Image (cartoon, rainbow, N blue to C red; front, side, top):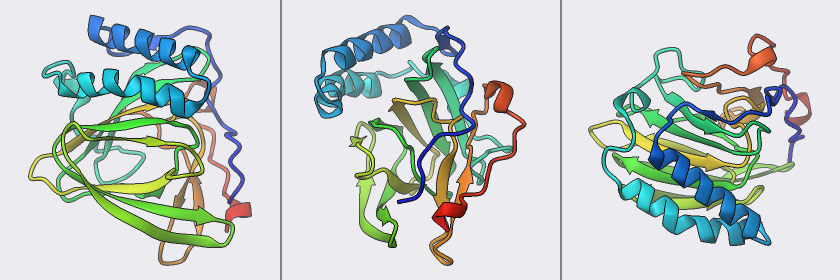
Length: 222
């Protein structure tokens, strides 16, 4: 597998940021932190978080329209909107919505963090890949319906792409243990088998001092 150091991360401010500052979001993050503190392993923590996450996905109206729209200046292309809802001041946790317009799909990409992803609206197909130093190949494709959620435990199941297969945009909610939009991650070109480093960014938040820093090429991953 290629080098997974997260050079170019946002310098932690020490202060939590709630871009969606509501009782629902604050209560959810508080429960997540309790589960992480009590879990002996990421798998235990995710198992404890799942029922809280499922309730959030099933709650109508908690996500305002401003976090549920496309972004023409998307760092992922295709008008895909990545909207930050919360990030921890130390960069150890983020919650964001990912809006994929009808007929669009994300690049094949990794996350470099464990956590949970759940579908709030629309329908998706997810392609999950096995990727290592020998190459990349499709492991499975699965349909994801509203309320469906799945976990990530890198390197297992960390490389995927999702596409919207519904007539409306799909909106997935990501809870991951890094500042996902600001760390330098990787995308795969399935035709050339080459890997590129990229920073997806957020539509509504910057990456601090690294916002205008060019992303280094993933030469070790070529």
